[in-house]
Length: 290
Image (cartoon, rainbow, N blue to C red; front, side, top):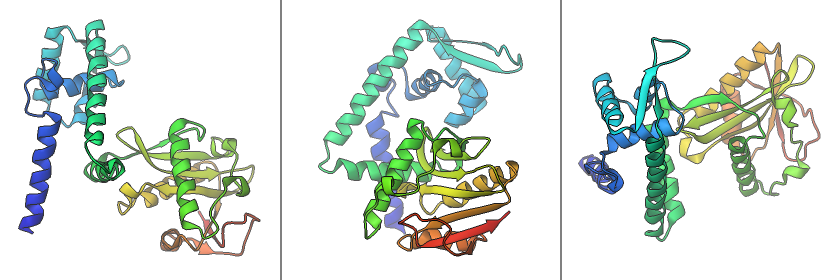
């Protein structure tokens, strides 16, 4: 156990040193990491002070000091929200926007340098995904999105690649009964994404029609997020949406090469039924009454 603890502490020291967490001038731009992170959050679209504070995990006192410092530098302005005067919002000034852009450039350069120093950059990325997802698991959000958006396409592409690797026959989406995007958009259905700090790490589709029966499609969770019960969360949310759309019965299909999927369905109340479509890939079929 002691060795495990020391490994974690060694990792913490390495990250602290690499990202410059103790530097008084993060990335050489004259302000510490805390101020730079607040500037970054505002630059990426977070404006309400309470939302920024929660996102960064800061207490109210520290948040106030960081905002005052950025205001004194002329990087930001703060004031009441036009929608609710009880809320404060922060916005970048022109100088703040320029500083944000420079931080983005330097941070991207730093990330490229980290990958370039290692002979197995993909292994580094996979390890980082695993750790970041584990540490941020309490902040994973499930959102609704158009399945034609880039984040959704990313998840679907990863899903298809995994089926290609795991199916003995391979997988060609053109031969599959791929649902129409409009069947997975309200009021017919929905497409859900699991998001971890703006990175899509899981998805599921609810393919609806004009009646009380719909299908669950394209359930996928990133390897970095497996074991965190994210598939169950996605399925539960899809079932909740189905109820709200007046759907009474859900069906899905899967392949025996995905035994963990079948185990999840059985555990959460799905019953195996006869084949209900002519898709060439599935060999197991399930139904659940809501």
